[in-house]
Length: 280
Ligand SMILES: *[C@@H]1O[C@H](CO)[C@@H](O)[C@H](O)[C@H]1NC(C)=O
Ligand SMILES: *[C@@H]1O[C@H](CO)[C@@H](O)[C@H](O)[C@H]1NC(C)=O
Ligand SMILES: *[C@@H]1O[C@H](CO)[C@@H](O)[C@H](O)[C@H]1NC(C)=O
Image (cartoon, rainbow, N blue to C red; front, side, top):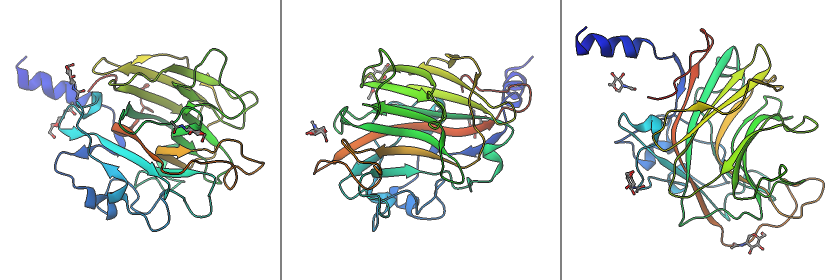
């Protein structure tokens, strides 16, 4: 078999894409304020904010699934990151442009891919709870799967420090299932793939660091992923010491300057015999 033929076979085995949030090398920050952005240009950001003043292009090595000429993107929060009336939260979250809340990205069997890395010059504060990725149901009543970090309100999973990434199941479950957790080590890409089976009601996590291929780190665990909704990638910082409605109460310090670096955001269709890309 010639090299060209082999390459064609490998490409043909790739799973179909549902959406692609990988950033072309020549993309400008201004393009995220327009409809040419792979993400919604209006949500979820503070009043009077623009994505071009929230996002950065950091100097880091390519993440696993950016190896083919796409680049990393950093999402930051400041004290101006107040979405609508949610004065208890600080939020900057990217929503895939095609993800309406009722589109096929939350049907069938889908695998969400993304990588995260710390920006050590804009550290998060481990006294707070953060959500760095989540699926929020279309009626806003729950998050069916969440990547959390920090001091979780109500307590961290047993033995899991606040400086950890935690993939949790539906936040309305009692108890909430901690699917996987790992130390959020600096200077390292943490690569995740999360298979959401909307038919069977299960969630399975795959993980690796830097350029290593993804490997399964959980079984396909029962988890209520019904309710469709939207995928959020970015920073949602919760307050400390809030009351019954933490969206509008609790403490946020002044002068916030925090960021998280993302790479390789995309969703593939795993409906056909569990198709999943473990490496590019
Ligand atoms: C990029 O990767 C190389 C090789 O692993 C490493 O030596 C270097 O520190 C990395 N650079 C950055 C900016 O992470
Ligand atoms: C972390 O957050 C706590 C609670 O908001 C605050 O008291 C503290 O000053 C913050 N620490 C840093 C290093 O910003
Ligand atoms: C890399 O990009 C080229 C050109 O767009 C494409 O043909 C190839 O399939 C891509 N490879 C991977 C691994 O994504």
